[in-house]
Length: 262
Image (cartoon, one colour):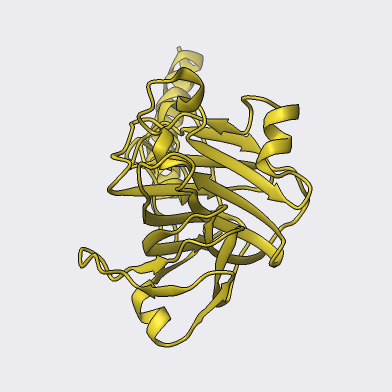
């Protein structure tokens, strides 16, 4: 009888300790995930920089980001653009504080003075035109000089092309000087250029978001959740200048540049 009473008392003490310890343990867990862990956002991390523990997955990205917005019209007025083989004026389109890059033979680039980009996100609005072989507009990044850089550019005249071949040549990755578009098309056909979805109006403004990682580049258009283009980088450059790019004989309009360095 005495042994049974001792066993009962021990069990009671054990349950009491369990009731005290478990709540205390729960209270020392990270308060950000104590509610079930569906989403975590700190003051330094938002969106893709958050720790996502939903669906049993944890993907912690860099919590130190710096996002900068650039008014291209004001940069032009302050002479903070370095123009190569083009002329730049204020855009007559009053929708944005934008710049207009002139048409000229050869490629052109307009570097943003004093700005470098490593990895992260580039966003901006662009406007080309639906004229065959006359509209090549995009972004140059990781620039070492005027002829050495990576680039993402668009061919608006192919956005809505009914010709199936032209249609898949709407957005392009390049890595100058070693991998211009022609070499990529000849040697890696279909890998570094794709169609754009959803298809923008080729004569109107459209938005792009370019995500640059250590080895991969993704291109989204008009806030699409699925990228139009995903490619592996073709060089080991980690950072460099960033600018507005126009192709052979092409001009274009640009606005609302945003750069997030991770």
